[in-house]
Length: 145
Image 1 (cartoon, rainbow, N blue to C red):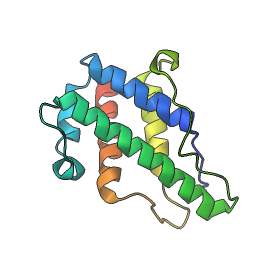
Image 2 (image 1 turned 30 degrees about the horizontal axis):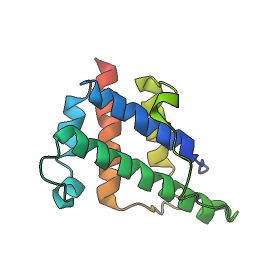
Image 3 (image 1 turned 30 degrees about the vertical axis):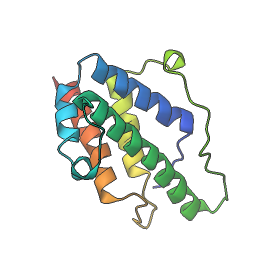
Image 4 (image 1 turned 45 degrees about the vertical axis):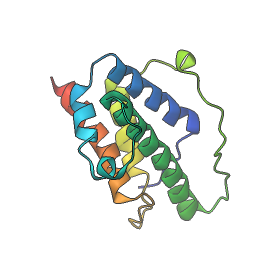
C-alpha cells in the first residue's frame, strides 16, 4: 500500500470537530480514556485545568504530531522534498466543516496507517500513537451503538 499525505486543513478540521463533540458532552469516555494514556501521565497541566481541556489538548497535539509523522513518512517513501508547513493558517472553528463520526473515524484510521512507510517505519512516538488510537477506538465504539 502507498502512503497518503494529509493536509494541515484536514487535520485541523478533524481536530476541531473532535473538540466540538467533547465540548458538547458527547465523548465523556474518550476524555477518560485519553487521560489514562501514558503521555497524559507525563504531561504537566496548569492547576485547575478541567479534564475536557486536558483531553482536547492531548488529542490536538497527537493529531498535529500525526500530521508531521505523516509528512515524514511521505517524504521517506517518495522523496519529493515537500515543505512541512509549521505555520499553517489556522482553520477557524466557525469555518470548519461539520464532520460526522464515521468520516472522522475513517480519517483517523487512515492517519494511523499513514504515519508508517511501506517498510513499516513509524515516525511518531508510541505514546502519541496511543492517543490517536484511543480516539479511533472511542469513535468506533460510539458508532457501534
